[in-house]
Image (cartoon, rainbow, N blue to C red; front, side):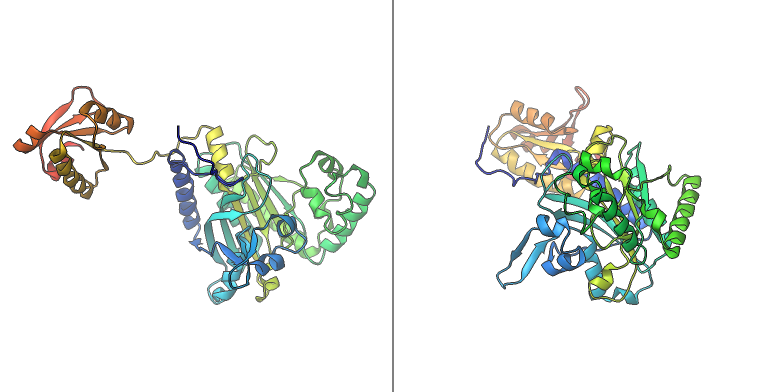
Length: 427
């Protein structure tokens, strides 16, 4: 067995051929579902200016403080591998003048992102996400649309037992009062918090609500609820969101939802609606994905005040749940024909035949040189091929080959060395 001192960097993985059908399935389904809602694809660079994230995501967030892969390029500019998809899409919205288009602008994206985190099941340092953004509409109906899109995609993949959690975290009008209540609440219970949040809750008490460690979960259970402190506008938005989601539940577009007072987002730019999707088995870092409204973000990045909402769903966690639930996906390419040859002249003729057969739409492999017929037949079976096309020196002189089915015993026929004839016989 071959070995090497080189390994994939910690927190990354190779996507091997046997896993590619899963990836093709989830990527393709994501694009199809997004298009059915009127969303168009956008691709942003894999790295951006570091300031885009430090300003947009927030200087004091854990992402910026501990998790970003940042470096100075050869020109002296500070560059960061994307830890998040929303800020780059908003940067593109501003830079490319998308505010001049009919609003909201509906966008989706797929690709790799990077965060320096402790690797664990479903969490990597290079990970992949499917995300959508609806920019330019502040209505609760658009919130519900985005939530439904994510749910529709997960359900269309064949996942069952999903749950949807929602909350409202208010906005710049009502949130400061709520945060003050949280600081007071946690200050009286600081000894019960985990070590990460003792003394740090004062700058951002929402982090305590987002913490999954047992001490913080226990203390947070009785914390003031953000929905009890909403201003009139946020309260109206919250009521309209729930009314719209109830309509979707009634139509069968959603199976239901639950209100979760501890649900927040870890980044500073979120306001009002936040939501998460969770699988049937909830344990550890089980959340498949989530999102929320980020009305302040585009203005923070230098654009005009523009509302927005979106989500990001982790592909690795989706794949884990697909496999755990035994969801079957379309397989990889089916090998129609393996060309088995005896002698150099037959091999050369097979190369030409293989090219002609591929032009007819067949998937064809020429068996390796230097092997006997029996070894080549074993190779053809190991590839799961439907047929073996066998050509020897005498066959070559007679202008024929043998097409043998590898799925039906003793089913074989003699065919001329014409790609069209062979293609027809191997239908």
